[in-house]
Amino acid sequence: MERSTGVFAPQWRLTSIGIAVAISLFAFEGLAVATAMPSAVRELRGLAYFGWSYSAFLVTNLMGLGAAGQWCDRVGPRRPLLTGIAVFTAGLLVAGTAVNMAMFVLGRGAQGIGVGLASTAVFKIVATAYPPELRPRALAIISAAYVLPALIGPVLSGTITAHAGWRWVFLGLVPLALACGGALLRALRMSPAPGSAPAGGFRSALFALLAGGGVVVLQTGGDAAVAGRTPLAVLLLVAGLLALVAGLRELLPRGAARLRRGVPAVIAVRGLLAGAFYALESVVPLTLATLHGFGTAAAGLPLLAGSIGWWAGAQAQGRITKMARPSLLRRGLIALVCCFVGMTALCLDGAPGWPVYLLWIVGGLGMGVCVPTTGVLVLEQSAEDETGANSSALQISDVTAAGLGTSAAGVLVGASEAGHLGFGAGMGVLGLAAAAVCAAAAVGASRTAPARRSTAVG
Image 1 (tube, rainbow, N blue to C red):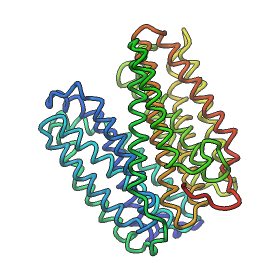
Image 2 (cartoon, rainbow, N blue to C red):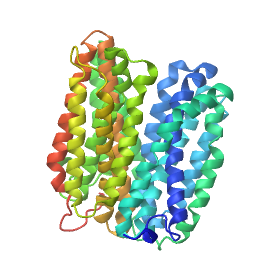
Image 3 (cartoon, rainbow, N blue to C red):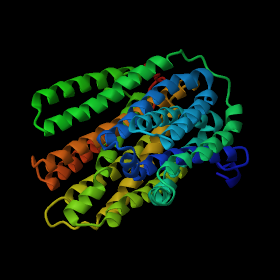
Image 4 (cartoon, one colour):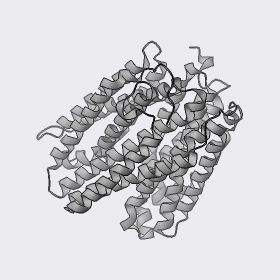
């Protein structure tokens, strides 16, 4: 393809820059808050509510994703995107000026809703602003936009926290949030007339709230089981599972649990790979520090290596035109399986820790191939009035599975801390489980090929 027709050609330049800025902004906020949180909870005297800052974001993010899909299909991406940026900005202001932990958690909840609304609208813009042959490269922008925040986010936010205070980690993003909305205005004006999708955003948001609440209750139940409170644990686990299943049945396409061919299988595979990857990623630094004696900086470097691999994979998939997307997806999943099996081997007694740097590049490469590829497959197989709903379902699957995966990893860490199993054994079990999940997804990758007709979210 000629250079002049790339995603940064004059007719798409502002749109591509706006997408990159928006996603980078959301990614930076997600990374920066982890650095700023210790200072924030100390000042606000809210250590007991530390976890709620993350839980609130997860639940409201799902609500935003649930509401945005059919809203985008009904009215186009303009109002959901601008509303999302406005709510996200308000959340930054509330968190940055919080005088107590309740206000801080409220701000984090608003940020979650804003990110959910805006990120779905960005996918809708990709579906409407770019021709089909440029969509893989446009989605590669979204993946690549996570790399710069991963490179500089923790250092920059740490510097801001140390010299200007944790509040400016939030308040300093406000001008950027407004700027990214301005950069996307041209693309929003060029969006085609809305389709005839049915109303249902509020109903979807309620089911997303139910699913997100189910994730939180499941994690609480796991923690109760580790603490030996068996009756409470059983009650919470059953309640959480019922809430999760009830919510996802309304939010994901029919047949997703069975990997029904087409969009349902794509969305299911995306959830499987996201849950496996983020579960293991959440414990990589802890594993290196605990089992191999790595220092803080050395233990965190594999995540940087993974980000570079992710960028490389995203760029590669955008330029591969002679391979069918399901086959490309399978290769990315095989890379993830190799990474996770290798991580399991590093948990054995006497194993060295240094191979983690190579392994996590491979894992990042697999994610860089798989994540944009699933996005392309969904957009290719969705009618114009389904792109918002199906893109929303794709991201709901991703976020929900990531929440479940990190929760499961946290429970295993808690179990090892309580002496129920060795740390190395627990992390080895997690690595094998992640590898098995991605291997199953690789087997099912052929089912992500188009069905006989497009499948809408039901």
